[in-house]
Image (cartoon, rainbow, N blue to C red; front, side, top):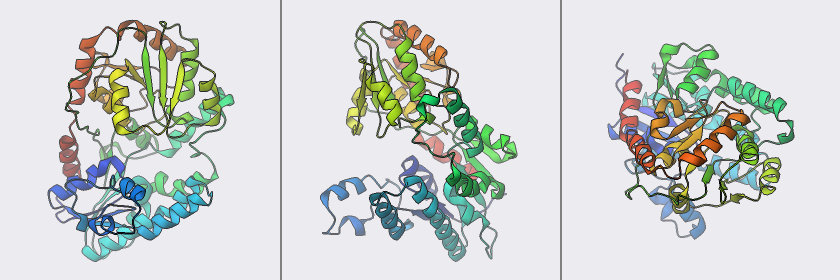
Length: 405
């Protein structure tokens, strides 16, 4: 079926660098992007805007996305940040406010008789609204289904009770009443579903979704202009990039690092915006582990190029964009099959796997790779070549194909 017409797209934040909205805008298929904060000229030209906020807001824009096609829900954004400042749970705040994006998308689709391409936390209200026309409902399931995530995290809690605190509080009553509606059931109202990994598709199929509705479209990467650099051949430099919580498997990595027999001078650097206290306690007890907060994009670039390995052994991951970031800089990666890594390549491309939550396998991989990666410059070239096969242009083309079926 060819739909014709434009789409209303909706999501919070600079999700995926706005690539889904840009994909639609490139072919004049974007009616409106509904989002939170966006750097429109009207906002950026306001003299009262503090320089610090101006700098942060400048990151909320994308080339190829016409500002006049963007509607920012500023009232919702102000309420959100006010609640954060008052100490309310961020999770509770998001669950309370996410429905507004779907409601705004529905209103825009009614007005313009547009179709819908909505990210999963914001789709339910838009997909279940009443319309005088028959919009095509395209769901972007960027994270695995919450039932699978809950099960995996609960199993890990039982196996590793010492890390009871978790930044990912997606398993409590809030999820049952909030995401249970939005994330759990949105696929039931979709005409097509875009998944960024086969693992995400599998989670939907396990929940009862027809596999024919799910289209796996891996994310893309903008390749760096600099040539692939090689770190020192001594020691073993490992990098972790991500939130320091249970879902990312950081406690598994730290336990494996603690057990592994590694070359002198080996070091594990953790780049975490936030980190669980229990995990941080373990990290701080290990003299060869360093925690870094507030790392800029330029600093992260340097860390990729000087590291022999980027390790992110996630228990559950919709894609894992940092894998592509690392590979694009020639840095091999170590992760699990519960990510997009099996969709990207294999060991010949610098991709190594351990079973999710298996500390013994992680330990063995660290020991093995510490002896092979530091001197293997050709593998860094192969890793960068693999990343080059996933340009954002391909992602956008495939997204448009699914949307317009």
